Length: 217
Image (cartoon, rainbow, N blue to C red; front, top):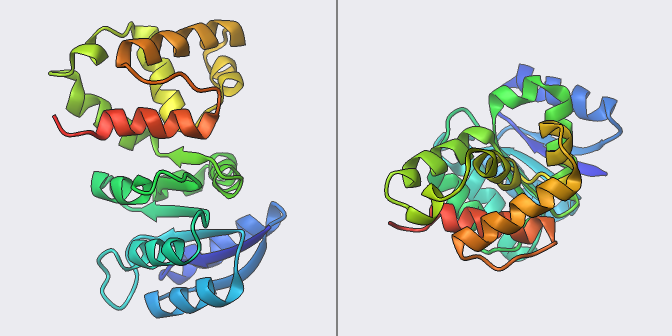
């Protein structure tokens, strides 16, 4: 699996290269600026891009904008964005086209090698990987006034949070130490209470849930 990596800090970039190579990824390019990332994404046709939001020369959202431009040129290009802080606007921009194959992780997650590699693989396969802190902020922002959300049980909220991160029913069941059948029942209840169409497609249901959580009050 070929990866284009964009990170301006040398030590972190070098560490990510070593980590990804150790898990069987091929690094097609490891770059440090927006212009370099634009060229790499246009010329190398990677299987997935792992991109720091803030890159030179602007050090604002250069990396994110490069990734979004590349996805407009190549719809569905898998992109995993790394950020120092939770910025819900970044998540909204990534999810805007509704095609999936996107992820948004805080850089702290990089230090959990298994979690980070799992996110890269999930995004490369067309799935969605959203940082738990992003989901928690979306849930907190809506919980006070969102009547359907308030009808969810504590267990259903736990399942919703894991679902929105991109976890399958099997993965949620394993984490909560319950049966897959129980999770299927919880997800069905969640979709009914939120007024969403039930879907067995993991990525589609993630996008539906995130769209619900992120809609205007």
